[in-house]
Image 1 (cartoon, protein in one colour):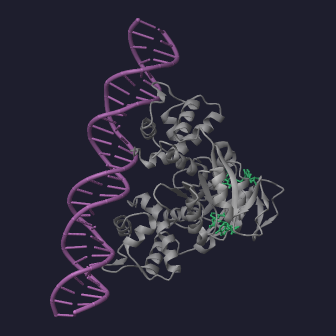
Image 2: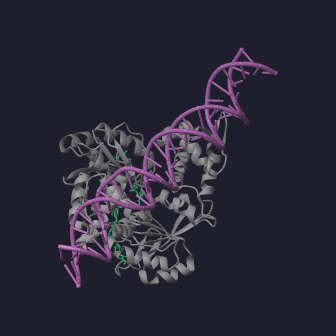
Image 3: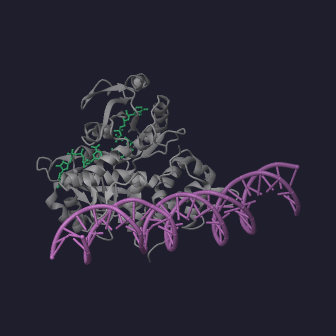
Length: 209
Length: 209
DNA sequence: TGCAGTCTGTGAAGTTTGTCACGAATTAGG
DNA sequence: CCTAATTCGTGACAAACTTCACAGACTGCA
Ligand SMILES: NC(=O)c1ccc[n+]([C@@H]2O[C@H](COP(=O)([O-])OP(=O)(O)OC[C@H]3O[C@@H](n4cnc5c(N)ncnc54)[C@H](O)[C@@H]3O)[C@@H](O)[C@H]2O)c1
Ligand SMILES: NC(=O)c1ccc[n+]([C@@H]2O[C@H](COP(=O)([O-])OP(=O)(O)OC[C@H]3O[C@@H](n4cnc5c(N)ncnc54)[C@H](O)[C@@H]3O)[C@@H](O)[C@H]2O)c1
């Protein structure tokens, strides 16, 4: 079954979920597509259309029940279960990721961390002990994590990606400034702050917008 | 002049530039749209069309001169000049950003860092001394930075964004998990690793793809 | 020089994505 | 109960984006 739901829609779902979480925190029960659109810099029609790919979650004349819609979205994104994540590259950024409290509440648990630097191996960061890259395959076999976060320098990115893919990982969050090549069936998302800034400066140039 | 170049195209330019940089590093002189397409998980036609929005940079029968195209792209994105950046929020992530060596080579210079935590103010991180948030407006007036990186907790994001916008900043790179509201003419790009993972898990669910 | 092979730039065609607008469900208030 | 005001879900339409396909430019070789 090759889904015909546009990928752009899938990319918006986490945003919807995040805003709904905010509304829930502020104790709001019900939200209209109009209101959501305002909060998301989107349009009511866009939001209703996106949601309609997955079912009918709202009520005419009223809107969407915040907690209900949030639960549905989490279900759709596969977040009703816990996901195990490994981290490769425990440098500055890797350490920030390991101590970051934002993953666990969403069901993402970093279960192991790897680095090729022998002086880091064996040290503790957060609640984990850094392991040698060589142990990766074995550890993956044990824990069966589904996701990997790659935070190594650009030149090491491809070999690390190859390694985690060989170990059976199917989803990769890549912080390195390198466009990794992966086989069919493996999903990669890149985090690229420099690129993000560069796409802003285009518009800030005197004759930009 | 309201440009009619699609924003998706602008978002791809940094990617093109990054891959070209890689090719230049490996000493490659010329590259075809075919080859670029392979490296970028894109198509030759897409790349030629994208570039054609800005001019004619290639040569039939040969391809694009790597260094020439890279220079042109940097020119287009407004990277022929230096950009000054301020950072707000010097926590775990903020510190990683301050010591990160990836911004400067692309022309982005972090010129000041701010935090509301008095115990951080006055301490040194990298080559900067952390300043109190209250000094932000004054410092912006002096240095005239064009960009801000926001790395504060989600609940503080909107007020920080309001503050930097009031100070005259027109481009914001936001790491906080919050969809900030900004006035017309201000550009925001969000970095959202959790959202990126969530959009992967959609496809990894048993019935995902 | 001529010819086969390569590769760009670009209109036109095709596909995907976003917006519109309206029927139907729901609510609130007389 | 009836009416006015909301707001969803959705097919039809429009806009945006991607792919196609080919003329024309360039290379290398005999
Ligand atoms: N620091 C930031 O704010 C930041 C922001 C965005 C992107 N990045 C990117 O994230 C990556 C990491 O950045 P950083 O600042 O943490 O760099 P860093 O040099 O501090 O850390 C990199 C770590 O990766 C390890 N490593 C290198 N090769 C490896 C391999 N083959 N296997 C396992 N581990 C290996 C190194 O030993 C080191 O500990 C870089 O690609 C950088 O461009 C960093
Ligand atoms: N650490 C990560 O790997 C990571 C990854 C992605 C996103 N984030 C996000 O980045 C942000 C920062 O993360 P962190 O791990 O560095 O958190 P942190 O708590 O270590 O740092 C936050 C800093 O912001 C400061 N701050 C709070 N309110 C402020 C205000 N009004 N003005 C100025 N400074 C203020 C705090 O004093 C603190 O120093 C968070 O929103 C987090 O969700 C972090």
